[in-house]
Structures are given as structure tokens and as C-alpha cells.
Length: 352
Image (cartoon, rainbow, N blue to C red; front, side):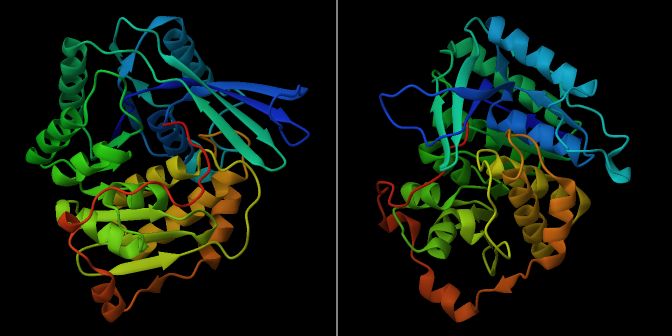
């Protein structure tokens, strides 16, 4: 079982429009979708599509929280937004994630994504303010749930009231019990997770650059490893992904451009990596599966969905390349010598 902490879950509302959205204008919405959201929730939905059991934990409250629970239950009963396009033999017996939320006083947030022919634009509410006692309860519930988990995933932004230091304490506490911990977050929280010894970090390139102040992709990943992370999987949009450890670096990219909604691509990659860790994949196979699963998510209209047939086809076509040791050494710079930089590359929105 994979335990998935969503620190800041959300109700995701997606508007599909026919024309490119322009500011200060009116636009006719062709389709509205409401789905359980937050990066960790999307990870769990993809795990369901992959046939991997999971349990969701995190703070949840108010009417939006109740609606999120109900939507997840509907998906488990075969609702239209179930994670896969169609069941395949290997996932026919999959079950929806168990829900073990921590009740909080504030209302769970909403997010809005507008999908037009040019791409996706996201608007993300900050989330409820957690009281100190609520933060501690979330941490305690996560550590308790981890006792029965093969892998623990922490995915998404931190809600108001939960500090990067709280995340660091959680990662450190989990690692001290021997748990394998995968973290997908950004900014100071990403650095805190690295210092606490996260097993795998999954930033995108913008997040890695911003956190470390290093432009060169492999060097930015190595800086996070220098801080204490075990492995860094860095997504680079159309350029695919890098996976970097202390002594090697690999890269892979889709064979061609993938059109669609990229909002949940990173979450699909986290799900694939988590499954790969449970099943003991080699590093190259882990990277290949992450890229293929992530790319297949782009072809689906809503974050948290994947196309199993597309993923299977891409997995067979992907070529994994090793970055030469000399290039790896030349790209390495000590993390302590750099200050965080401002974002320098465009990115596609994902619900934090």
C-alpha cells in the first residue's frame, strides 16, 4: 500500500473553452468538470488506474471537503471521472483509495483551471489556515498510517499554518522509521524535505532552479542530493525528465510532442515512481515508466487521469540515455554556495 499525504487538498473545477482566453473578455464554457483535487489526490487517483492500492491522508474540512470525499467515492463506484480511460486486465481488480482524512475547522479550498487551444491556466486558492494543534494531528496521523505502507508520498503545497519546518520534521520522522518517502513540493518546503533525507524528490525544472539558485538541470538536482535527498526526478515539460542520484544521471523524453492538458502530468509521474519503488524497478525502468505515464496524463482532460494504452505505447518507444560521468562532474556545484533564484522558465500550472 502507498500512503499519500495531500497537505492542501482541493476541489478542482476545470472549464473547457473553444477559443484562446483573453483577459477582460467573456468566454462561453463548453464543458465544466468538478473533480477531487490537490496533487496528492491526483497521485492516488492515478495509482488506482495503475492497480496500486493507496490510502489518502491530510487535512479536510467544510462543505468542499465533504464534496471531495463524495466524488472520490463516486469514482470508486465507476463514475465518469475514474482514473483510467478503460479498465485493462492488469487493473481490473483495482480499488479506489481509502480515505483517512484529518478533520479541520477550515473549509477545503477550490481551484479553477481553464483549458483552451493554447494550453491551461490555473487559479489556486491558498487553503484553510490550520491551527498548530491541527498541524500536529496531521503529522501524527501520517506517521501512524505509514506503519502499514510500502511507500509514503507527500505531494503538494503546504496550507497556511503548516511551515516548511513542519514538513521537515515529518519527513525526518518517517525516515527514522525506515519509511521510503517521495516528496513533490517546491520552494523552502522542497529544501526542508531534502535536508530531512527524503528518499525521492520530484520537482520540475523551474522549482529545482528556484530552490537551489542553479540553472544547469543536473547540477540543480545534485545540489538537492548534497542537502540530503537520495534521488531527484526532475520533470522538464516537453523535454522529458532527468533522474539523478549521487553517482549517476539519466534522461528520457517522449518521442514527439504530446498535445492536451498538462495539469496533472507531474502527479502521474509521482504515482509511477511510487509504484516503481514498491515493485523494485531499476533506475532506468523507473524513469521510463515515469515519462510514459506522465505523457499519457497530458492526453486526458482532467488531472488524475491517465491513458493506459498511450502509456504502454510510449514506454516501448522511450530511450533512456546516461549522462556521462565527466559531464556529471562538471555540472556539479555545492548547494551551499547558491541563493534561490527567481523563476526563469515558463511552466504549466498544476494544483499545488
